Image 1 (cartoon, rainbow, N blue to C red):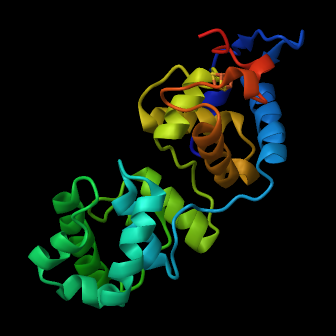
Image 2: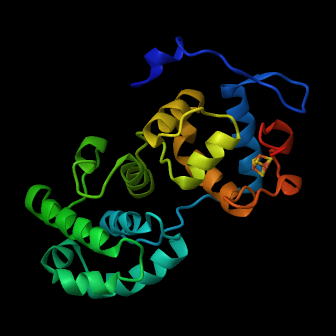
Length: 232
Ligand code: SF4
């Protein structure tokens, strides 16, 4: 594990809470996972897909857009462009128009098409199954690669850090960092590896339902007593 060597060097920050129990971040994360699993017993990716490539396309489109909206768009485009070769050969202007209701559609259309071309030319049309290969594709950073690896291939390489995860990790006192890559490292150090895929879904669900960007529903929150932001 790439970050384990740092672990012993990290200060063991203690976390005060209403439970009367002093917790370090690992203990805190354990309680968070247990409670959120009870709150959200069924965890699944919010994006609809029928193949690893469809998930790759959907995840690229989902940056700064909602899963619900992306699912509406992909329902149509996945009928028109049936596979990676269709995306690679598409007329760019038409593809842009097809995804134009999504934020940053020009960039995203360009990345999707260029990624499709690389997949055809270098990977035999298949989506690669390693972090290193995935992040070599246009428009694919660690978040997208983690989502594809975990949800399409059941491979756990890291923790997908999206805007909900960034916000909640900070509010819950799980990290002092704001950079997604550093937040991912911090979360990997305090989360059992078997939960790396789940923690993203759990924090996203909690962020959508209770701890929203503009509205924190402290009074309805199952993490209230252990949350350092409960008075904010
Ligand atoms: S107590 Fe408030 S700030 Fe903390 S996780 Fe719950 S809703 Fe978010």
